[in-house]
Amino acid sequence: MPATASPASPGDPAVRELISHLEQRLTEPTARGLSQAVGAAIRDGVLVPGTRLPPIRTVAAQLTLSPTTVSAGWALLARAGSVRTDGRRGTRVVDASLPGASRYRSALERQAEMRLDLSTGVPDAGLLPNLRVALEHLTTAGTPGSYLDEPVLPELADVLRQDWPCVVADLTVVDGAMDGLDLVARTALRFGDRVVVEQPTFPPLVDLLESVGVVLVPVGMDSEGMTPEGLTHALASPVVALFLQPRAQNPTGVTLSERRARELAALLAGRTTLVVEDDSAAGIALTPPLSLGRWIPDQTVHVRSFSKSHGPDLRLAAMSGPPDVMAAVESRRHVGQGWSSRLLQRILLSLLTDPGAIAAVAGARDEYARRRGALVDALARHDVVTGGTDGLNIWVPVHDEAAAMVRLASEGIGVAPGKAFTVRPSGQDHVRVTAGLVPVERADDVARVLAAAARTTAWRPRTR
Image 1 (cartoon, rainbow, N blue to C red):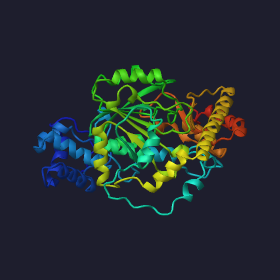
Image 2 (image 1 turned 180 degrees about the vertical axis):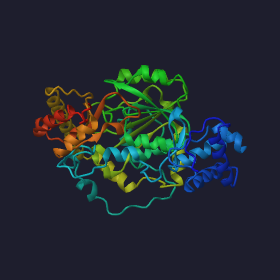
Image 3 (image 1 turned 90 degrees about the vertical axis):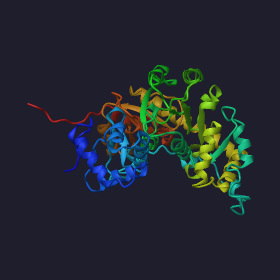
Image 4 (image 1 turned 120 degrees about the vertical axis):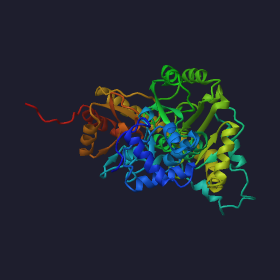
C-alpha cells in the first residue's frame, strides 16, 4: 500500500514502513544512493505526491547514514523537483506530472487570447532602443584568445562601473537576472537553509529557491521597502540569505528608500547573511541605483538586468558580489556555459554608449512613468488605491482574485493572479497589472474596468 501518512517519530508505523521501502532500494550509503532510493520508491508508487518524508535525523538513524548525507540526498531530490520543503510542515513528495515552475506558470499562463494582455510584465517593444548602430559594426561573432578569457569585456565593465551603486572588486556578466540568481542559489544555498524574501515577491524566484530546498521566510513591505520589524523577527533564527528588489519591486512598484536600505544594512551587519539584490528595473526606474553594498559590501550580491530597458531577448545582466561568492559562481560557469556571449556584450556596450540609444531608454523611462501615473490616478478616482511609485507594474487590491480575473477576461483584459506572488496568504487579494503597456489615452477606460473587477465578488449559492 502506498505510504500516504505523515511520518512523525521512528516508532510510527508509517515511518517504519517508509524506511523499510527505502532500505530495500538503497544500493549505496551515499547522498546519491539515497536520492535514487527515494526516486525508485516514487516510481514504484510507494511514495505518492503529498507524502511527508521523515525528519533528516530519523532517516539518518534508521538507515545508519550521517545527517549530512541525508541532507545532501534531500537537496538532490529538491533540485530534481521530486520533493519540496515547506518550513515546519516538512519535506513532501511533489507531483512530477505538474510543471516545476508552478508559480511562474500560474502567474503568466493564459487560457485564451486577450485583446489587452496586462499579465506579462514585459516592456513595450515599441519603446526599446533601435539596434541599427549596435549591429552595423559587427562583422563576425569573434573568437576568444582562450576559453579561460575574462567573462566580461573590459570596456563593458568600465561602463558598468560608472554608475554601479557600490564599490566592487569583482563584476561579471550573466545570461539575464534569473541566471545570476540561479548561480548564487546553487552555489551559496543548501537544503534546509532559511532564506528571507519579500512578501509579495517575483514568482520565478520562489520557484527557484524551492527547487534548492530552502525554507522561505517571507517579510512584509511598506512604502519604503522591506520592514525592519519583519526582518528583525526573521533574524531571530539564523538566516543564510536575503533576496530583495531595490527598485520598482515586482509586483508592487515599491522602491527601497535610502533610509530603509541603511536600516536593513544595520540589522544585517556583522552577520553571515548574504544579501542578493535583483535590480530588474535598471534603466527604466526613476530612482538612482541603490544597494545595501554601500554599507555591507562583503555581504552583498547585486544583479542588474537590462531586459526591461534594452530588451528581454538580449538575455544579459551584470553581477557583482563578495570575492568568495563570485569565485564559486565562476567555477560553476566553467563547467557549464562558460561565459555570456561576447557578441551580445558588444551589442550591450554599444547601446550603453550610443547617444541615440541612451536617449531612447530615457524616453521609455519617462513614458512608463506617465503611463503608470495615469492608470494609478484613474484608479484612485474609482476609489481603488495602489501602492508603489515606479516601474512597469501595479499591485491592485481586489475583493476576490478569481472573480476579478473572470470579470476582466470577459472584457478581454488579462492580468496576473496575485496568489502566485505571495509566499503566504496576505488577507487581501490582489492582481498584478502591467501598467507600462497601457497608453495614457486608454488609462481611464482600463481603470474603469479594473475598478469594476476589483469590486466583483464570487457567486455563491443561497442557503436555506
